[in-house]
Image 1 (tube, rainbow, N blue to C red):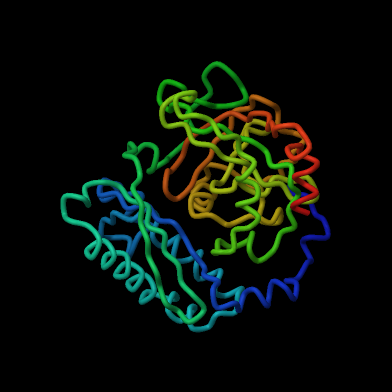
Image 2 (tube, one colour):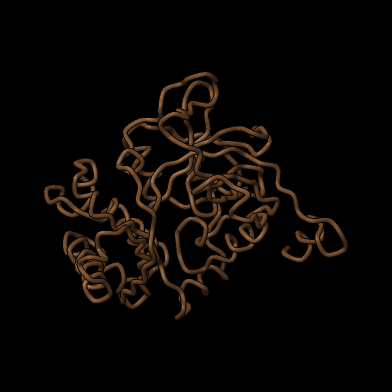
Length: 312
């Protein structure tokens, strides 16, 4: 059940509209390049024309999310570049040109995160960084593993190692254009991620990453700072609804369209310490982690109260 509240009827503030036309603002998406994705029939169906194997993860969904951002931001030039079959083709060409210009054939054997942006005039920019190898079962996700020893959650420890430690941000967020869509305006997310404890790599198991969940002013989970979360509720997996104000991510869309989960409001107060949940994003696919209590160092400059005051 989704909670109805005044946010459902909110319109964009004048500050949002002004910021949307700022020359420096760009809509963006982060796309995994991985040559092994060409062997995934699921990925083929949602990349390009649906017939030609693609090394780009859920390519069409990334185009669609940038198009949705351009629509709401009122960027007609960007919308013209992105829409239709020509938009799919041009985005693929932009990504391939970046790979050809930046990497040798041998280097393209390794996975990459392609950070693609488009501005209000319809100009693309692409940067890239290395990503770890992942099994196709983590990327071409078909089902959450069955319940083993506990309910909830449904975590198959033998097949999927824990890959995340997860915190909850104490900073209440007001949804806006810049939480509904992924853009280069990331202040909300940067503030939240600044609270994640710094941990020495040797203190954690191999390949554990950190995430922090974003909560709106009504106490509803919106999303993760870089992921979509999934919670076990009443015998099924659920993800926060769009009415909570979070991004409409690519893997989130995939999970909903393939029946992996349903939308349902998740209140912060319903999340238990140590609860295991799934996370997904467009670079790393699916993985799970456990909710940990967020500890901010005490002292005159280190309390949560001081932090919230400074970031109000």
